Image (cartoon, rainbow, N blue to C red; front, side, top):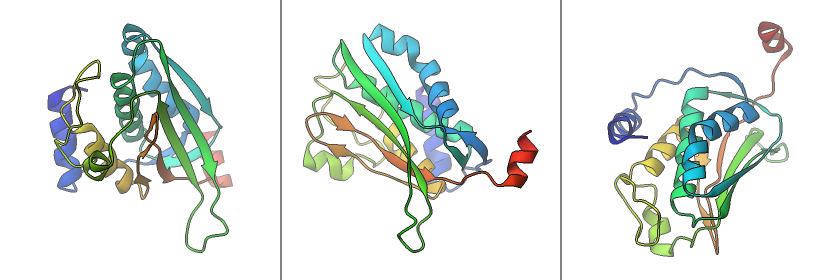
Length: 187
């Protein structure tokens, strides 16, 4: 993503002007679209992209979710060393036992990067915030994770980071199985 696109996206997200056009999407199609956009970048950085996606229908703006996945995977590539792996997973999370919580899908992007410090974790989703990039292949503009947070929250989901030895950027997005009416519309 270039700086102009990032600035436009962050403006739409922060001003609440992001217009979602949700439809039924398949998680494997969303992941594949993001990987297709980053295949050359991953090869250039000698990073293997490995996917495991369950076939899950979600009610989401496909373009928006592909942008989120692309930004997260790109971030993982940027902060991974050569000859390492980035894993992309999509799996259902059924919260039927929790009142008021809908079933969801969890997308997880995990890399073999150095990890993120506790102080950085507190601010990582703020616009223009950057971690120390001295050990990465590249540096960004500090907007990607802020944009991802805004886009996921507009979908009613949430995003967070779990950082240990490697870095993971998982997020939740609404999960809605197809109804018979929706299945007939797609047939």
